[in-house]
Length: 118
Length: 194
Image (cartoon, rainbow over all chains, first blue to last red; front, side, top):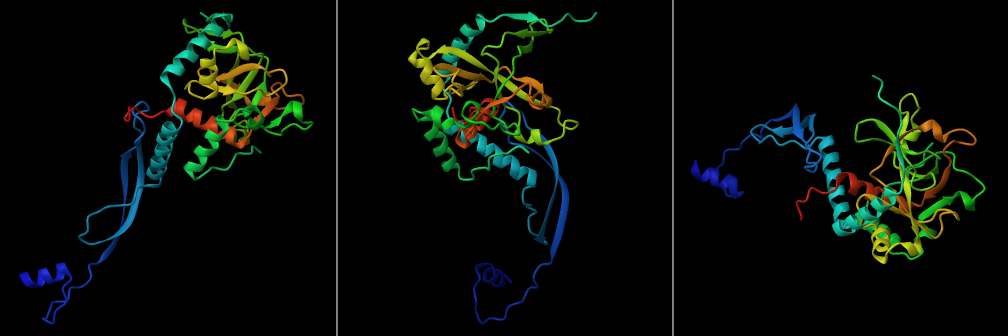
């Protein structure tokens, strides 16, 4: 018994008589899954529900392809990450431009639009 | 029907296009595919990135929570940041879009070289440098302020003459740059690589 298992696992081919095992049955599966997005922390995760479907052999671990919405989410997130890396902002430059805008805005007038109705 | 630029699927190509535009000394000449002052025809629709002229103050909620308005900081010029596809939807489904005011920061010579470099290099997160789009805006420095979005009824862009006519439309590379800056402003990375 032990020899047969080793031979099967290692793919050995020998002349000894071996038990021929039937191919495991394949089944289709479908279930409603819940997952969370991988958005940046500041945006917070978004929980999603979707259907996972696939086909596996009996006894195999149940690993399904990602839902369509998960693939979109992952692609969008990678796009944001890559854009942020490729077009880096500069904190110092941002503060300098903030100060420039503050100077301009300090000269602009502002007034209430209307009073709150009691 | 709004005309949306097709996506660039090759990310390196997208970056090359953006960097090439930012690095140009004659950026204003490559920034717009259409300018009112250089054309006899007007676009039939509105797209994200269009510069529109609307003589209106800038509404906001004041510290006391009441509605208020501030003087427009740039002679009524606004940048459309609402999605192009929303202009294709009927008003009874999608009535609104968003604008941000374009601020006139002064004449070229009035800004420090550092600030000119910051703006023209698109290094600041919250503002978007807008090169001159008309004779009137030439030799002035302008930037759209992402911090001050305003909701506007899409009907403001309809009619002849429209209350908010389109003054200039971004070229493809300039729209990708705007898209990248909006993405960076709204959904920057979460700091995991700091």
